[in-house]
Length: 94
Image (cartoon, rainbow, N blue to C red; front, side):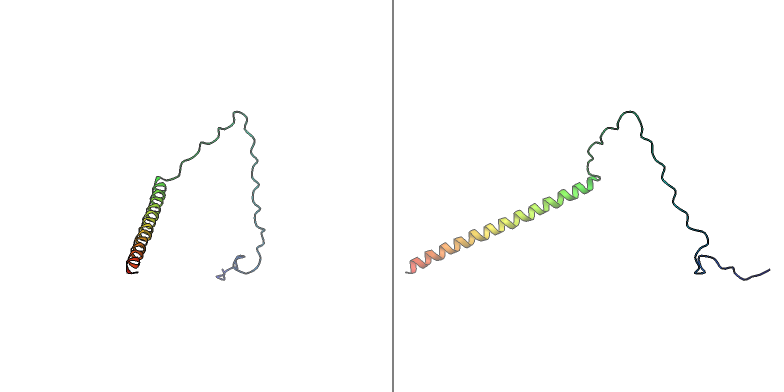
């Protein structure tokens, strides 16, 4: 009786004696006869959460844009008021 381990093909570094198995060919499907399948209905988004998050993101972007634009308009109008007031003071001083 021998206790020497026999070398295995995958661990010996030698190529395997058995070639790798070839993939089985796919069976060809026969076309079914009969009525054609109706066209699939248009699917809604997969999750209502994704729709809600997208809607909130769009609303947030619109809100930030509106606040920014209104602040810019207020700054421009205030600047115009100060310029006209400065022009009036300059006219009085002449």
